[in-house]
Amino acid sequence: MSMNLKDLVAEIEEIAPRELEEEWDNSGMQINMGNKEVNKVLVALEITKSVIEEAKVKGIDFIITHHPLIFQKIDVIDNNSITGNYIIDLIKLGISVYSAHTTFDEAFGGNNEYMADLIGLSRVRRLKEKRPSSKEPLIGRMGNFREPCTLLEAGKMIEEALGIAGEMKMVGDPNKIIKTVGLCTGAGGAAMEAAIWNGCDLFITGDIRHHEAQIARESGLCLIDAGHYGTERIFAENFAFKLKKNVGSKIEIYQSEINSNPFKTML
Image 1 (cartoon, rainbow, N blue to C red):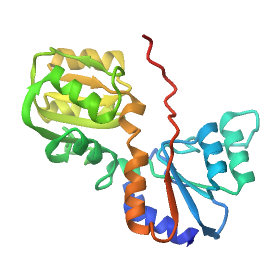
Image 2 (tube, rainbow, N blue to C red; image 1 turned 90 degrees about the vertical axis):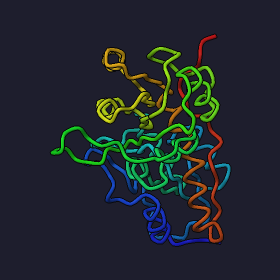
Image 3 (tube, rainbow, N blue to C red; image 1 turned 135 degrees about the vertical axis):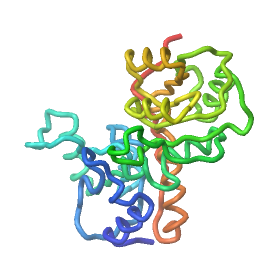
Image 4 (cartoon, helix red, strand yellow; image 1 turned 90 degrees about the horizontal axis):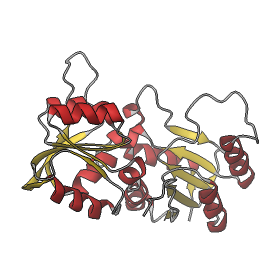
């Protein structure tokens, strides 16, 4: 079983269209080993030393990640840098790398819509910008719990749905009733203002800053910071499922088994 690399990329971009990419992003090919046949694909949140070793053991020749391997401009591939080492190792192994970052955040059925489904939201729609002149839509989504619940109840349910027990932080009255929920996977603090403007009772994201949390508290918006990894670990299972559905009869597709969360919870 195999696919031409060019044909595989076309299938990936059916799932995560390049036109959805944010201007500041670097989705797309990160390492291109040429127009060759691809036999085995690994889907992972990001490139790490452990993911490269996993790919080596499995005989992978193409990796799809969410986080771009090359995000900022690189002037030199330096084996004294972490990213440089990754690039050198991957090229030695003959592995191409493609990243579906904001393209999959915004895509139909992508990270945000998949998370909304996991936590049981109905009437899922895009978060709209407050300012008509701004680019819209935002990457985030909003929806409604089918049955209103307290913030504490919502938090417990979200922990279970995302598989991140003990890793979340919360802002707001634990007994406040939550009906309308906004969310943005990854670092979504920039979408918090839109969540307030859209009348959300709760906003879920990762990497919330202190001053963002203060603004939310003063405005009456409840917050759940489920972590950057906690809100995006779902990428691999979601993207692998979609790709298997489309081309699983042509190539072998693996979901990475590596937990790349750099943080540990102190007990």
